[in-house]
Image (cartoon, rainbow, N blue to C red; front, side, top):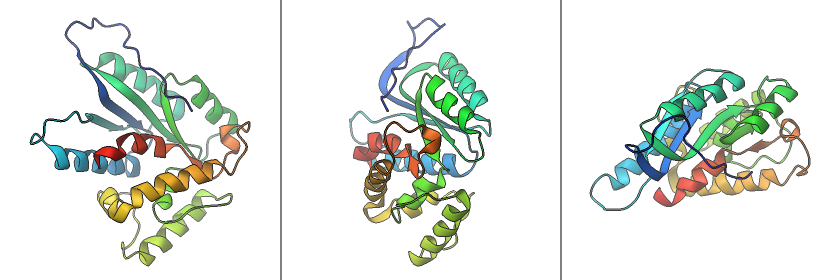
Length: 214
């Protein structure tokens, strides 16, 4: 999927902070996804802070609890009302229980980068711990996550765990997750619609852009 250029519309730009490294991540979920990305944001800020003069991304994370159409409209409003320009805007949502045509249309019609997952965001979390090589339901993913968490000494998996990033990012597991997702992406034909591509998650593309700062 190509990264879509972000163009600021409807506002004067004279006083805006133009910083191509700025990231905006807008999530459909209000717990797991924001917790993960806020953990990533915290790790980057903790590592660099103001002690080193390097260009690091400014990451804004928003969890909404909206459906796909409302989520995209919300992203549009946030971008247009922001006091800075974003180099990359990502909208994060799942196939989950959405109808195929609704899911595919939302991806196709969105003006921003879409980090979609089929069936859900938890597939990205699971990719830190194991590679999925076949169709998997959202219920199966949760069972596998619980099993892998116990196996790796991470305790019990909980959707509202605000330390989810810290638990999964250890020992090079982010790079493992990215590579696992790339391999999963190859399991389905390119000409298939996104609703037919299971298991697949594009969340790795956000993290891959930020991996050098971790």
